[in-house]
Image 1 (cartoon, rainbow, N blue to C red):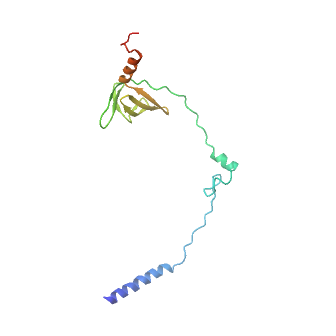
Image 2: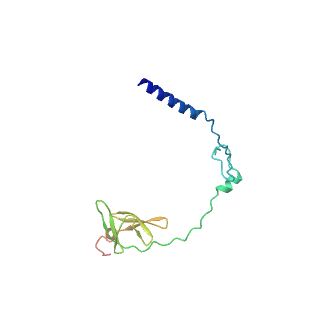
Length: 144
């Protein structure tokens, strides 16, 4: 048994020693040649950027599209649920994440809903909020 272990160790050591004797690894030397790009190893706080670096870092401005008005949305009601809040908008039942005429619904609560349209958030109130605001303007039931 001891002899088998000794022979096994000799075999293992002879093969492992052969891998070390193959020589060193030769790798090509790469030089950083990022022409017109900033050096990632340069400390940005020591020296001001060169004119070439400034020219590369300038971002072209995209012409802004004219603002489109928010599409007409009539909120008929709001359904507050345990799992998903929903709203009835333009006679369709919608939930958060749905889109109506290009406007994405981001939140729904008892006051109404918030939609994201043309890079802006808009609040669209529910009928209950509209009626409450009307009562505060005319507290005697419509008499002026």
